[in-house]
Structures are given as structure tokens and as C-alpha cells.
Image (cartoon, rainbow, N blue to C red; front, side, top):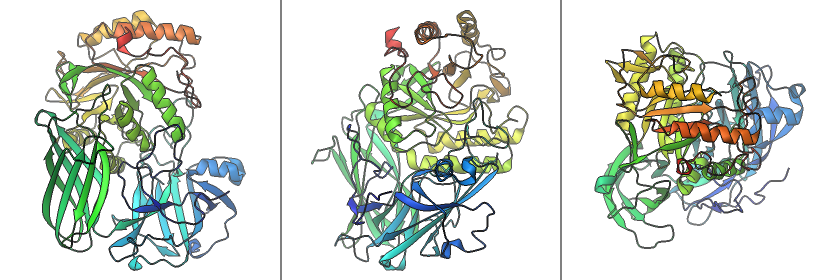
Length: 611
């Protein structure tokens, strides 16, 4: 395989392109720097450590690898391509090693100084990852020798005064297992085996890895934006990373459009900063702010600078939008206007970003204003794309498959990792903590499980007021003292019979909590609906499931969807999510071609404007 970066000269960071000629492998994150980077994707040496001997035998000091693999890519694909393990996917536990050489990057004159260091970042890798550089173990910025989590990025700062030898060797050990206590979404485990709605694992080197020049004293790529639309205010939470304590100034410039040279607002804040990492909230006003919505997905450009006492500026740039989402009575309000959520369930699986992009545009053509990303870790560029084209996103934490103290600890850690990297995106409006009590199977009977979910719900309300939060999507929502611990009452209803569909919707509207879905809609204390929270049919349809009944061809399916959707809009319901966008493994109920993004049903079919 041929490397994309033969000279390893660092490229200037830039905002990714969404034109048809898509730039391959841009850095997959929302924040960009004016500094430079080199992507280390391409051919790596690869082997399975079937007896888990690599640590004992010090493979990071030198090992004869039996195969090669293209990074990024899944362990499963690498095993298949290398015909290792008889080409069969792994079972129970897997340990693999990757290694490659790279020359010392050529730094620009303004970056080859004591103000800068090199940072190594993995877009996502796991579930457990260890990294060595030239045989020396690395620790993440957070101090981890073993990074856990398979869905978000993590970084290493390279010391030694930023000086690497001319030739360098990067070694990575990845371990994963069918452990039901790990967050895994719908990937198989010891509890739920592959088949039906459970899928093959997608793990390992799943996103790009890159080396970039960053300042020792800088703003990290972790921003959180909360809009106060009535007052044209933005509350910005950012994170400083400091090696040299002292007095710093944070300078903010906000531009209305991408190419503008004159900011619409500017502000500065003086801070005494100690060594280490610190989160800080800043507030600024945007006069006559243009709000973000699916109809007008307007984004402002933010340039944030950390300026030291000598006047040196370390800069980051991102886009954000002002918007407000609320659940009031039986309605959902976006920017103080009632909105109906025309949604679709999306499971990207192992889709490439180019395929994801086609799917997103196709969902918009279907008339959807909402995409529910179903308990999966996804390429973070999906959030940028949704911001740009105007799609609301419902995000879910990949769930464990068992309920105990360890699984809850892992679940919370995964949620916090995701939140830290998604907070700039106006498209993300809803979070689910659990789905159909997977990973919380004892939700109806175990006070520890209920208290954990209640605590997370209250935490999200306070720390992340820009989102609506669902405790357990589908049924068995927690009621405490008659108060629902969820901003939405969500229900999964699968039936191919239109008469039965209409009857269940009538029962829901009337406040019936049992006999409508597979389980009672609430657990804990009695809950009396009385239309006090919005009602969402968050899964329905499924036309195409084996032995499910319903439509037998595409034309019939389109007709049935239209009838079911029309019946939905006759009731006091705030939104719905059709299941689902594309086929995935045994689930053959998609209405978008996975490869091409072509629609299998007419445009606008899921949009309320066509009813």
C-alpha cells in the first residue's frame, strides 16, 4: 500500500470540505487550528496476539509482524484480509498489535521553538489501547497508560523538548472482549449474540491517527456552547492547557459568516492560570443574533485565542449556532416555536464517511428534520454535516449489556467522553441514556439502577441545559414522586396493522401506560400523563423485518408508510422516528440504499409538510 504522505511535511489545518470532491482523511473533529499536522494513516504492520504474550515478551521493543493492515480499519476487516485466524472473526477476547515507522515531521519555522510541542491523537481506537513511541510507553493528556473507550478521540503530548529522532517507531496494542459490562451498543456480547438485531463487532483502529504541532499553553479542542436566545447571549465553556503558569488573556472574535473579516462581536477575559488543565465559562453577546434551525442552519465562526504576557497567541477556530430546545407541555419548541420531529432511525454500522454523507442527504430528501443515531459511536464529522445541512440529531450512549456497578461506571465514563467533544454542535438536541433497558435490565426493580439514571438525568439538566434528555427510550421510564425523570415520554410501537396502530395511538393519547408497548411505559411511582410532557413515537414501522408481516414490495411499503404517518399526525404527538434508514446485517427494513444513498421510496415521504 502507498502512503498518502511520503515527505511527512506537515499540512496546514483547515475546515473540512463538503463539496463533491471530498478531502480524504481531514482531522475528524469540530475544532481546527492554524498549526500544521500530518496524518499517519496508511499501511501498518499487524498481528494477532492470540496467547496475549506481547506485554510479557516486550513486543514494543521489537517484534516480527506477520501481516500488514490499512489504518484506519477494523480488527475484523484486518483479520479477514490477512487471512489470520482462518479468516474468522474473533470470539470472547482479542488482542492485536500495530506498528509503523515515520520520519520526524518537517516543522514550519514558527513552530520549531520552545512554545510548541508535538501532539499525537487517535480519532477513536479501542476498547483498551496502549501506545509506545520508540519503545517508550506514552500516557494520555489525562494521565492514562491504558486508554479505555472505543468511540472518541484521545491524545498524547510528546516531550523531550519536541525533538524526535529522524526515524521513529509507533507501536499500538489494542484489546477488546465480548464483555457485557463494556459500552457496546448493538454489537454482540456474552449476553446478546450476533443475529437478528445484534451485529458483529466493529473495533480496533477505526479512525485516523495524526501528529500535529500545538502550543504548550493553549486552548484544547473541547468546547461547549449554550445559547440564551432571548438575550442574544452565548455561554461558552472552554478548556485551557497550561505548562507555564501566569497571567493570560482569552480573546474571542465571532464572525457572522465564514469569509467575514470584521467580527460581529469581540471580547477579552484576563485569567491567572496554573499548571495543568482547567475548564472556564465565558459569556458574550451577539447583537441581533441569527438563530440556527433546520430551515436556516446558520452558523457563526468563532476564533478563540489564548494570549500570554508576551503577546503570543495560541488560536483555535470552530463554528457554532444559537438555538434553544424545550419540552413544554405536550409540545417541543425550537427557538420558542412549536416543532414536530419528523425523524428516522439511523445505524451507520461500518459505513465510510462518504456513505454516511450520502445517507444524511437522503434522509433530508425524505422530509426528515431529525436523525436518531442509534446507540452507536460514529465518525464525528457527522455532527459537522448535520450542523451545515440542517438536521436535528438525537444521540445515544452506546449501552453495556448488563446492569451492575461496573457497567454503570463504564456507561457514565463513555457519556462524559462523548459530551466533552460534541458540545459545539447546534444540531444535537436530544440524548438518550439507555434504550429499551439494555444495560439496565433491572430498571423496574433495582433502586440502585433507578437512582443512577435519575442522578445522570439531573446532572444533564444542570450541566448541559442545551439538550433534552431521555432516561430509557421506548418504555419503562422512571417516575419518582409522580415526576417523570425524562424530558420526553418515548414509546416503541411495532405493528404492521393500520387498525391496531390507530388503536394504540388513541390509547397513548388518552394516557394509558400499560398494554401499549412491549412493557409498561413507566416504572417506580405512578405517573399520570395528562399531556404534561411531549409524547414521541421513537420507533415504528420496521416494514421489512423477517416474519413481521406488512408490505411485501417497495410501492406497497411507501403506501403503508404514508397511511401510518397520516394517522400519527391526527393525534397529540410531538414527533416520530421511522425504523429505519438503511439495511444492516439481518435487519432488511431500510428505505435508503446503503452504498449509493438512493431512496427506495418517494422523496418527502416522512415529512409532515406532505400530509
